Image 1 (spheres, rainbow, N blue to C red):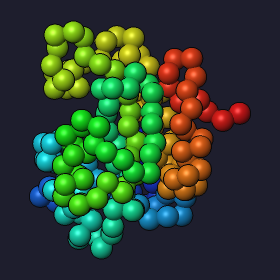
Image 2 (cartoon, rainbow, N blue to C red):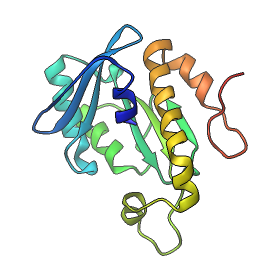
Image 3 (cartoon, rainbow, N blue to C red):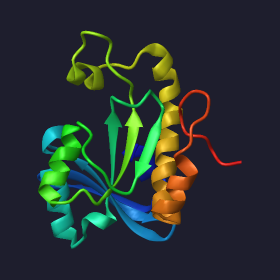
Image 4 (cartoon, helix red, strand yellow):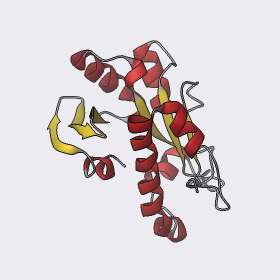
Amino acid sequence: MIEELLGRIDGAASERSRSAWIGRGALGGRAILLVRPRTYMNRSGAAVRSVLEREGAGPHQVLVVCDDLYLPFETMRLRARGSHGGHNGLLSIIERLGTRDFARLRIGVGPPDSGAGHADHVLGRFPSEESRRLPELVKRAADCAEAVVVEGLQSAMTRYNRRHETGSIEEPR
């Protein structure tokens, strides 16, 4: 999704810090940073905090995008705040920022097959039918993140927190 968004921003430039890859530019006339931690997922809070401190930004300016085992494949849930919900990456960010008050977009990858471990599931390959649908999901997730930047969080939540028959978000008519 980061790569999709990077292709949409004006004046795109990227850099690497010790803890993160950072893309910079403007989206809808607003300056944005795209940050991909270079740490293990369960230590991503260190990278997020480091970038926020360096940029003089706060948690209220963050949209964290992550996978979610507890949502069906293609389901997206955009929230203004919340718990980690068992996601170690979100737990790390909450611990490092000292708050749960940051926006998050959770993208459903579905539960693992019985007997499969969580790490193997989220790091493994998608089944063929899901792989076929993945490019559209990435595009819609990027559309949602762009809407947060351009339209605001509340508007994006109203627009993207709906489902259609496959469980994914439904575009407005």
